Image 1: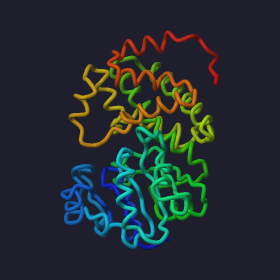
Image 2: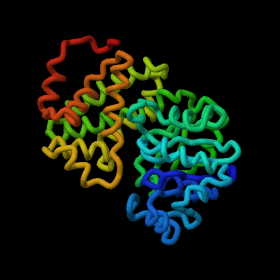
Image 3: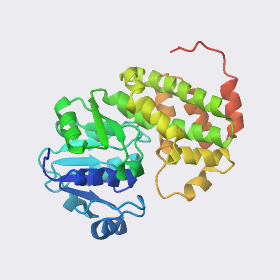
Image 4: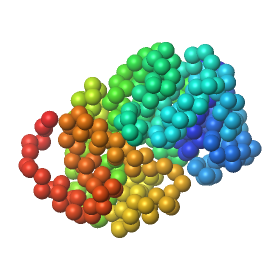
Length: 337
């Protein structure tokens, strides 16, 4: 199906892969990049070697660093900026939007300072008339694999079922499968907090703690995320699906995971500043860790693994010392609230 022009806002690896998928499905797509050279490369060469090297993009895909050009007349707007930039970028975007385009949020993370999920940020920026029926796209998905047409499955969550089904029809093809559901809260929390746990998994692997430790870490972190999801009104069952355990497994074990890579380097002795100085792409878990700990504390939810990651990143606690604190905690039953 087609609903006319689609504007994709954010030309990192994930935004480019999603825009390319839409273009290959026959939709008129234009991709916005804040970096002029990235937009020019996509427009003229059909390549984004800065964020998605080695991938030839669909010949019909357009790109621009002019936000007005991207958004004017768009019937679908896909927000794919890093979470820290979603608000300022979409506040600029608001000036160029007319009518009632369907909003898709494909950014994963929590806004630092407000602790808001991305759909909540869009609601504040655009108001309920436009953003209440926003569709959240999340799940286990490395951009490079989607761009290379490897099989990928994700979740679309929206309070408006018709909107979710419409977006499903736009993206789905022989290698990209999308499932719909209504739990926006659980879907966004799963997609955001798994990045925090991927940092922990990378640190564990970097320390050489073994497979037992990784398995325990993933399982207990899922319990932490489920507790917070329940407290905030989401459905813990969502976390047994693609947006929860699926994304958690991929991000905590896959070699393409930026967050796991950051954790690996920290576990091997580098400082956070040293690791980040060598990265162009954003590792969402670094900022999300702050917001996650703040959110958990404000709602009285214990998240000891997230707190341990925070202590390593921001309190200069040595990784092995953070591990010792975790292992020395008071014994508990496996299920507790």
